[in-house]
Length: 249
Ligand SMILES: *[C@@H]1O[C@H](CO)[C@@H](O)[C@H](O)[C@H]1NC(C)=O
Ligand SMILES: *[C@@H]1O[C@H](CO)[C@@H](O)[C@H](O)[C@H]1NC(C)=O
Ligand SMILES: *[C@@H]1O[C@H](CO)[C@@H](O)[C@H](O)[C@H]1NC(C)=O
Ligand SMILES: *[C@@H]1O[C@H](CO)[C@@H](O)[C@H](O)[C@H]1NC(C)=O
Ligand SMILES: *[C@@H]1O[C@H](CO)[C@@H](O)[C@H](O)[C@H]1NC(C)=O
Ligand SMILES: *[C@@H]1O[C@H](CO)[C@@H](O)[C@H](O)[C@H]1NC(C)=O
Image (cartoon, rainbow, N blue to C red):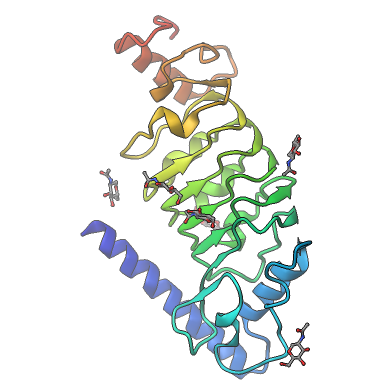
């Protein structure tokens, strides 16, 4: 029930925003959707021509963008995008500039060769994203804290990259999350707590520096000055449940 309600709320938001978009079109500006796709096309390298050829903007028939490779729409006759799925296309470059893509709810760039950081503007660019799959790329740097502001996220997959640093404890605020993985990176510090569920150790596997939570190991979670409150909470839980490393509070 609760899930349905949040879906309805998300849909209402999207329809209201689409209405604004229609106003923009009727005023003679290019639709947000089209400039979104143009900016994605420009910012990704597609050496094997897996999608760019199909993304031809010279056709202007209603719904033409819905026939583009990887683009899904709410309705095939309208240029209103649900998501972009460009997985396993050997794309190169950096995270695309998705500046005009604020109605996008699914973005899957998994299994490419993308490099650079995950931009911290992501929550401004994709405020309604529910599925974000950036797994199996070569993203590096830290997970941006502000990703917590993508409050509709259900699925967040960042596994199999080169991410470093702490997992932001702000992820706690993603209360709709139900599928999460950061396995196979180089992250360190405590695993995050989530609002009302815990993810299994597989979600964190092969990050030699991670500790606490379902991982069990408290090595690296001992409390120095740099410890967050969360670390101390995990330290206490670890102590209570006898997971190891007791008495570190
Ligand atoms: C977590 O909370 C959200 C929102 O309150 C709810 O939709 C979801 O079903 C809850 N999940 C679990 C596992 O309890
Ligand atoms: C795009 O479509 C137009 C008209 O349908 C066609 O003339 C043009 O060659 C196409 N461009 C590419 C790059 O395929
Ligand atoms: C993303 O795309 C890949 C490859 O096409 C697919 O295997 C994976 O399930 C997709 N991820 C999600 C969350 O749908
Ligand atoms: C990813 O980066 C690693 C080293 O940083 C490199 O060995 C590997 O070839 C890269 N993979 C891709 C697909 O770019
Ligand atoms: C998310 O970010 C926007 C602007 O960046 C801000 O106005 C908004 O309050 C933030 N949302 C939440 C839930 O903090
Ligand atoms: C999470 O999403 C991935 C990619 O789509 C899928 O393979 C996996 O089964 C999902 N896991 C759960 C617990 O739903």
